[in-house]
Amino acid sequence: MKIKNFDLKKKVFIIAEIGNNHEGSFKIAKKLILLAAKAGADAVKFQTYKTENFIRKEDAKRFKQLKKFELTYEQFKKLKKFAHQNKMRFISTPLDIESANFLIKNTDVIKIASGDNNFFPLIENILNSKKSIIISTGMTNFTQIKKMLRIIFKIIGKKNAKKRIGLLHCVTNYPVENSFANLKSIKFLKDKLDLTIGYSDHTIGPEASMAAVGLGARIIEKHFTIDKKFSKFRDHALSADYLDLRNMIISIRKIEKQLGSYNKEIQKSEKKMIKMVRRSGYLKRNMALNEKLKIKDINFFRPALTENFLHLYKIIGMKLRRKSRSNQILKLKDLY
Image (tube, one colour):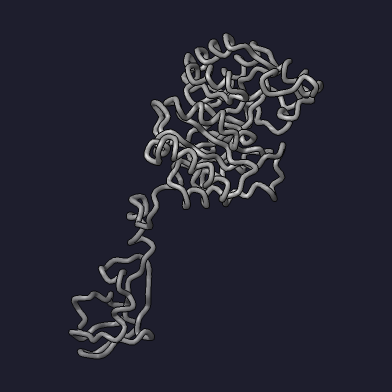
């Protein structure tokens, strides 16, 4: 997946998921963007919708709450500009087709929520643009994910999908209990699919996101709030606050460096340690010309002062080229 001016191969893309934690306050939305930028996030994410386009008015309690949290399209334009001014990407999740059409022109990346990963009238509308899409995979199994991808590939092709589509492992609970996080799904998806894989974290605490990076996630989405006790709205309690997010990002950046490359080789930093902690062989007793070495004839002492520290077992059974004294260091050139 390609995100403008961001190299996912070199750095994990960290999204501060504000969602509706602004609760309809444009002022708080801006403050959350500032805090996310200060914490080191690469992007902020919101939800964009017209309540009447996806919730029936008869569902009065839900309709009332979401209408209260609803921001206008003009406010989202200003939030995008504000995010860019603070050197962050602006992402949002459309919850209706009208809002998807708005976001195609007014966001850097579009996010599809788990609840809509099978809502193809919405997804296809976005696919027909050139916008990059991150899709959460909550409430799906691998068979359903493959079915979803077949439809996507049919519309835009596999090659284009690799450039435009990212999938996030997600478990749709708020919060997710540790025993249900199933983080190994990240590596499973990464091994099975030739796509960018990430993690949408609904657990409490930073550990799952940090572990996800170790398992290969290239995108991390973490819910973010100004205060975990801001209100009774469920997302605040499971979200990271500023210090949580900042510490998590610092840890992830350390982990990125610690992960290194997919091979096993001697690191530059440890080469100087080789002679110090490897061993050389020394004779325990005086030995005659042509006498065969046995392990009981040798003391193995640090440091490794000769070339035979790589071949200590090789010298067992070799013979001496000359008469040698006790405590003499053994060198390959003196053996045959």
